[in-house]
Image (cartoon, rainbow, N blue to C red; front, side):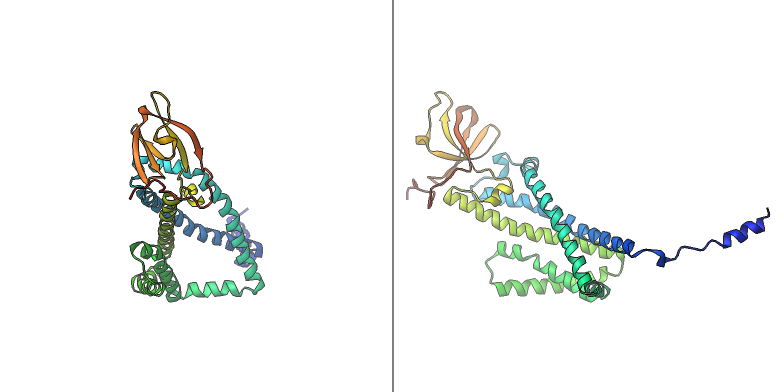
Amino acid sequence: MSSHHVAVDRTDISPISESATSPEDESDGSVLGLLERIGSVIVPIGVALYAVLYLGVEEMYGVFGINPQQAGIDQSVLLGRLMGTLVLMLLISVPTLGLIVGFCWLADRLTGGALGRLVGGIRRRPWIAALIAALWCGATYWGLFNIVGDLDLAVMVVIAVGLGVLTFLVPFRLLRRRPVGRAATKVLVGALTGIGLGFLLILAMVKGAVEVQETGQANDLLGYVGFQDQWAVIKNAEDDKPLYDGRWMMLLGESDGTYVFYDCDKLETFRRPMETTNLGDIQLDPEREKGFTCGGLVTN
């Protein structure tokens, strides 16, 4: 057999055209692409939110006049306390993500592909996409504005819109010229979203800590972020007799051989060495009578 026949046989092999791809493959690819785009935003949100969370823990314990280290709380302890919350969030976020993807797919089918064309049209117009991302990033500073000062709603909206347009619009437009820039925009938007949510979380944590200080009860949010609503009766280690008239004290934590307590009746935070202190009748999340408030023994 000659080499000429081999060459002729090879010319009979036709290349696979792009049209041979089935609609199912294209649909799967679009769904995978959507999941990839969602993941590229969700991951920075989670990382930034966890990074800001420790600042919230510092503010929360600052209400009681201590820092997290004095209560024995560091990054590893915080992560351990948050493990159950993280698992719960994972169990909730996975089906939620599936519902979002399914809803978007169904909406696109019901509108005859109009939704997909709309999203694609926005993405092909870099100024519109950059404007939406800029306005969103400006809105992420909402929580920071609430922490810095008590501003009116209209003032915060004006500042957020102005900040987004003046600060992020042109950089986002320039970043959209290249794929790397578009990916960086997603990461930046996700990170700022996580930080913005983190500042809102800080406000809620501080509010919850003030509520504990005033009513002696912690809300569910504080439990989710690792705060332990733990109360005990302090006893003398030598004779095991109750101290402070046997009143209940909140155990904020322990560090370097020292317990840190909060006296709800006197609105005071104090410390006692562990070697001279026994804890009795420990309770988690104790029930309080309706209308109970702390400060009953505060002297003016």
